[in-house]
Each structure stands twice: as structure tokens, then as C-alpha cells.
Image (tube, rainbow, N blue to C red; front, side, top):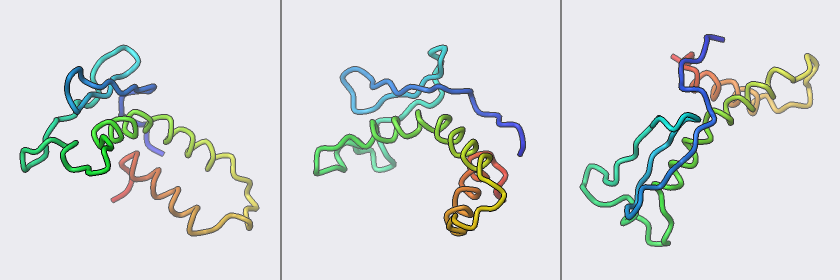
Length: 107
């Protein structure tokens, strides 16, 4: 696998005060990803959810967990025994494709 070039985790999500958006910060507090509070139509992201959920927060939390999720999946795949007949081949392929996508190795 190629060396990862993303900002090392852990990352955290911080909601902006008095807004429906936030940003993701690395361990030193530097911004990794700043979320905009609007989409291309200019409407607030929160305006698109009739159920009251906050998609900007949900997206930020998912993004913030990405380094740990990738690390966990890589470790899990590395720990698989060589005789893994019990593992669903489609699930293994999905995991390996997800790692390749996250590390930029997928064409």
C-alpha cells in the first residue's frame, strides 16, 4: 500500500456557533475540512431535512471518524488468517475496494 498523505487523526467535528454547519479539525486544532452552510441552490443544508436532522453535523461526524475507520479496516484486513473460507468474498472485496478508494489506489 502507498503511504497515506492525509492529515493524521484523530479528527474532531466542531459545530459553528449560531449556524447549521461546522468544521473538522485535527489534533492540533487546525481545520482539516470546513463545511459550507449552503448547497448550490443557496439553501441551508438543514432546510433539506423535514425530519429535523442536521445533515451538516452528520457529515462532519462521519468525516471526522474517517482516519480511525480506515485504520480499523486496514488492521482488520491485515489480521485475517490466510485460510479464510468463512469470509464472504463479496464483503472482502468491498473492504479492499474501500481501502483502495480511501488511499487513492483505486483507478
